[in-house]
Amino acid sequence: MTTHQILRLPQVLETTRLSRSTIYSLIKKGQFPRPVKLGERASGWLQSDVCAWVESRRALSIVKQ
Image (cartoon, rainbow, N blue to C red; front, side, top):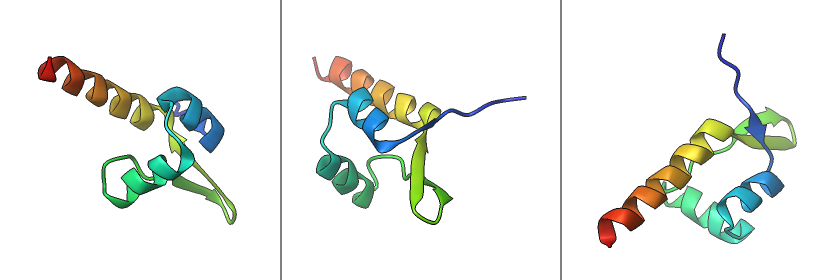
């Protein structure tokens, strides 16, 4: 059975080191994973999606060097 850790916004901000406004701007542009709805007023991101995004950024920086 696969388990998926859900990250709330403060954890995503800490992991990516981006601001809240940058995260939502990237989501709007389709360049960052969309959050999943957890309830009426709660959402979060799959840790695997955030980690994959961070890894893709790292891979891009290596290619550009």
